[in-house]
Length: 124
Image (cartoon, rainbow, N blue to C red; front, side):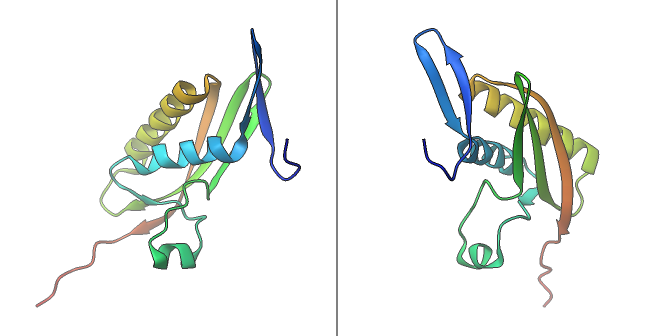
């Protein structure tokens, strides 16, 4: 295993499976970005935003709590969306994606709204 990455192990009948925390973070970030009203993950740096690169693991921290995962994710939302409804949709999407792809149980998804974006007005 690489020394610079942390892995989450899952014991299986035919051997152990190791999943990088970076991979789980990317899955969680991508799931959050699929929700209408989520405009970004504030952890991504300005250079990535200017170049149009999407970094789905910035602003996502995953920790293991006994036999389950706890996800902390920061999002930026579009003005006009109800924060509680949007946060709940993000939680459901992240839980569904992580559990379906990794086979691990997600105990909690904590959402931090780190900013609001506004649509650019087209004044004439």
